Length: 130
Image 1 (cartoon, rainbow, N blue to C red):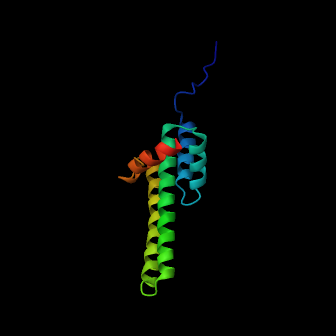
Image 2 (image 1 turned 180 degrees about the vertical axis):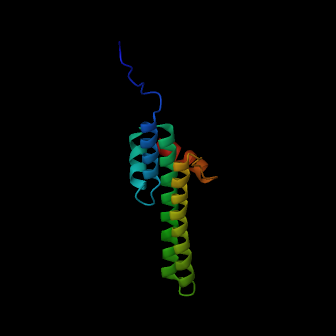
Image 3 (image 1 turned 120 degrees about the vertical axis):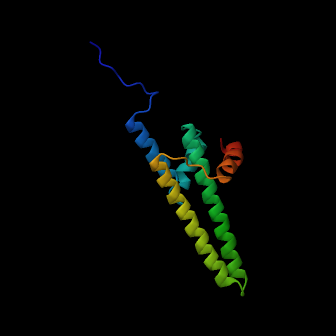
């Protein structure tokens, strides 16, 4: 009697866990930018991996742009220095909290889309990196 071998097309619990782990790595603040970029550069991965990579890169680049703009503004002005640095810390904390929130939603099996930002990531990064 032949033994049955699993078919690779059907997701198993092990494949789903690995996929969730990999998607969670993409969402780690700052660090997840690099595996996300690598996934998009190779153009390999599932549809969900590519979408999560685009979202991760968009979040990281938006944070980096905001961080540098607020830091530059704080360095060039005398009156708003403290206010811009406080705003910068709130902006950075927000980036980290959104990333952790997305990781938790991923582990719960809920949607990982952010209104507006996910669509922007799909349109802009989808055009240039996929």
